[in-house]
Image (tube, rainbow, N blue to C red; front, side):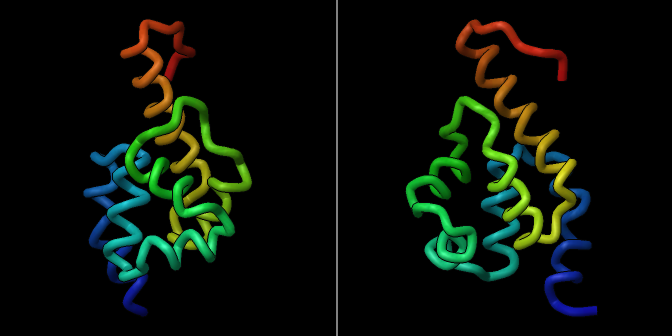
Length: 102
């Protein structure tokens, strides 16, 4: 078992409790990738990664972004989509907007 697999096993229970943003940030930190390196790998501006990790987004991230995160962090794509949708819905509720069922 390699180090990334060990870390992912340790995080399984923790990630169930985290928001989408928390999962992105904690996973990146646990596997020891600096934010600028992750942004380079993901081919996205550092500001975009920061916004996603800090919860500053109102719409579901692009499927291509979610697929890249899934690949880099070895987290199932569907799990990331579900977590991101829940976070978007929570933000919309706070803003008094209509939300699809999550």
